[in-house]
Length: 106
Length: 113
Image 1 (cartoon, rainbow over the protein chains, first blue to last red):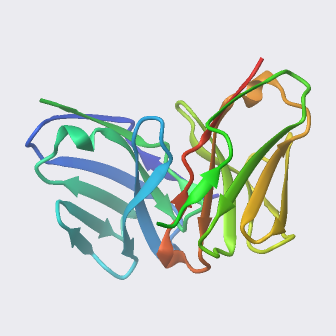
Image 2 (cartoon, rainbow over the protein chains, first blue to last red):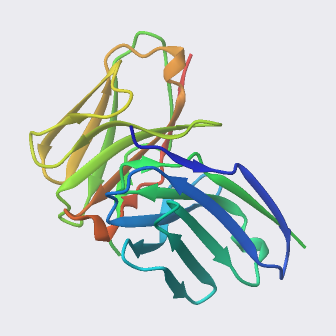
Image 3 (cartoon, each protein chain N blue to C red):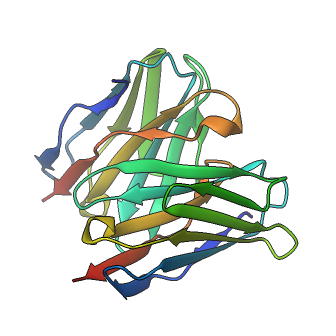
């Protein structure tokens, strides 16, 4: 069945760039999504990328898609302490990765 | 501001009780979903619905049922609560078609004692 894999933890310093990686298996996915979950809250849609795109930029966020390798990444530029959260990769909306906890230290 | 509202933020129930978790969305979304979230396991899909009175099993439907009598409301039912159902439950909704992503509720933290 479909599967989405992410690394579980990433720690960076404030001001650095963060890169969160994800691999997926369903090659028919039309859209791929990144969600953010702050402590005690539900998931919030951050951004998404259409499968025929290689890159999408939205302010500090850059999504890169390598469809051949089924690899998706989320880059956060100038990471702030408020970016500390769990980030989920999802394909087609039904299958989520286990989430990457991003910890940003001052 | 559009939203998905889950009726309870925290809930404590006894083993064997019948438990209802309610979710309401005000966006006229066709699709609604129930997930549970556990440490180290991420989000796991319990049930989803693409239309009123329609339901589909997700990855872990055992011990749960759902009801969707109206478009805006999707209820998750634990027929006889057990301690292994202690979890964070998340409801989500979406429009038909992949592009819109999901809108999530804030979650219900259920503890079964």
